[in-house]
Image (cartoon, rainbow, N blue to C red; front, top):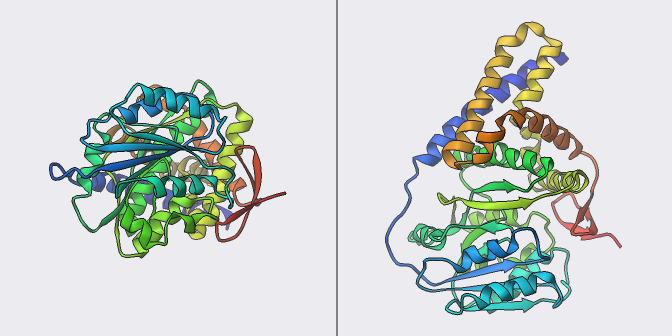
Length: 374
């Protein structure tokens, strides 16, 4: 029975790799809109601490080749180190309207949502770019994403990202996983059921679409507020897309303990955001499944080898053709280690309800909401 189950799971992983290849081809054939009006844009950036590379991340948004935009940032306290970095960068671009908001202590669990709500209330424009502090973009970023909003039905666009690691092995492994597995899952979901989600590092949305879901404040109790935001905008009748413009997500260097805690939080959050999708995530681990199959059924090596070959083809297609990832070109041989490590985190995600986020402990509820532990 166990051998048969392993064979079935490995066959499913092989089919998933084929699906990823088809999904990548479909995404690459999607046209990139060009021309048209360029509406004014408000860029809002929640900040918390002077993370590695923050200054250059901020500077990349001030360097935009775009006719009219403003940049707002928010910190929880006035003495946050990110405040000085933002003000220093803003001073070098006096032509760009920029404001910093000190929010104070959030009245609900998700501090990021509170920062977004405060900035959106102060923002002047109706096309909103919500960008995390660890993202970095090219000078034509605003121009390219604004072109996508020529479609009046488009309510939200979520940007795929290329993870850029710090100097640690653990961040390098995580970045490899993000640039192969995570984006592959988004592409597969897009092909199968359309885009009914958003991913957090950078989201572009119409203010009208956010108001249609009751405003971002309605997401205040959810840990994966980005995923819920995309789903609710789609349910409200707006079109949601995976943008053709990628960004960089600088994840920084982390010691193993901090990295493991972060990845476990991600898995536990994902399990509660989409319960059945998390269970189906087993098919995204071809290497562990192939090894399991070979250990139980040595004669199944053709299936295992075929699955691993397709896994390599899918990873290369996503990392190289879509993201242009130099990390994968240099460290592709670490991918098996990352696959095994990620599989262990996936298994661990089935257990436990507590997470640690920016030094505070929270309890996850079954529906994806979370609350602080006193």
